Image 1: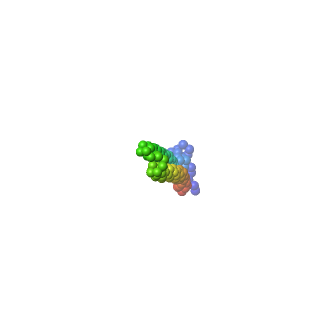
Image 2 (image 1 turned 180 degrees about the vertical axis):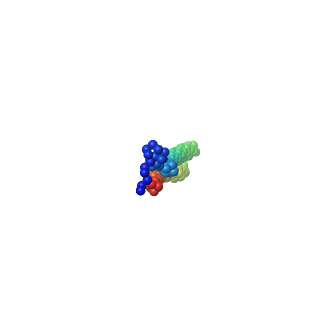
Image 3 (image 1 turned 120 degrees about the horizontal axis):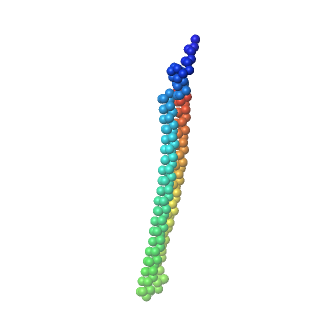
Length: 170
């Protein structure tokens, strides 16, 4: 025969009602801990995403700085070329020689060739620096996206594990 239900209002009634209505303290702590762990995993993914976003911006800024340095070097090369050619022309005319013929013209041609080579190196370096910076920035952008997704998946898996464990506890 089944045991009789305790009378309403008695200590036995309230003790039985409490244990039936509320999960155990350990179950509640487990669920709460898992929820906090899932939230922490999500927040960690967001923090890594923000870090990679900042790194991408830093790389682009550094790339712009490098490109500007190469551009300044190219401009300095052109200034020096004009100064050398002007000095060469002045020396030629000052010495009574036609400044745009003979050895003066040869020196100018050599100056132009060397400056042109330096200028092309600077232009090539500028393009390479920009390409490298854009590539690295895209890598960081992709890493940021992966970090965000990983945080979401980590939080989701922890929630699923908590649900499964809660179901097992009954």
